[in-house]
Amino acid sequence: MNQFIKTSLLLIVIFSLGGCGFIGNSGDKETVNSSPPAATPTVIKGDELFRPKREEFTKLPAKVQLTGQPYIKGKAVYYHRHISLKDKSEKRMTAWVYQERTPFLSGVTAEKPEEVETVILEKCDEISLGSYARSFSGEKSETIPAFGWKCEITIVDKTIPAVIYRKTFQNKLEEFKIISGSGKEDRAAPPSNEIGEFLKNLPQK
Image (tube, rainbow, N blue to C red):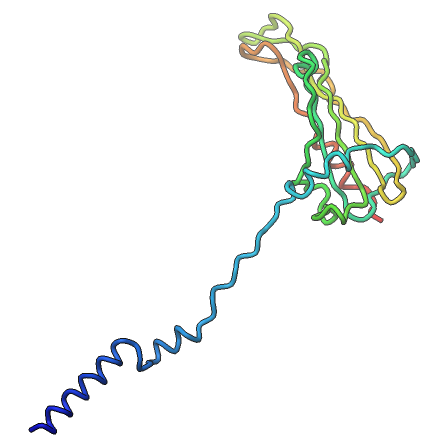
């Protein structure tokens, strides 16, 4: 009888130890041997890399070495600065802005500042283009002012370093355009498509 009691007590102790985790099982082994989850790499956006370099990249070199055949050497970075008539009237300075999305520079856009060999600057000023006729019920009734943009593209070869090319793009007053409705003015967007086509067709070095 005593032997039976001792055996029963021993079994109870063994099972208790197993329940407390002193006796391993396959699940415990998996927990012990499993590796910690891999850390997610930090992705730094282009704006965070190129914004601190704005003053460096937008400052024109003293040397001007214009070429009749513009080009893009290596990887390029693009900054734009648009100054509206309202900015001018209020004497408000606008800053250069890093342009991350540049589909017209496909394959040559720098991902890091240290890759940059070409800097492209787009400086646009809003201007008056003239006026358009506004109509009501198909009849011309009055004219309204029309505004557009004059943009200068400057290309800098940083390996020289020098300004190698300048080109101006400007909205044009359409010969036949009648404005309907109650608008008091007509404001065109900068000629981005023309600029993009020009840059897209530049040879690469």
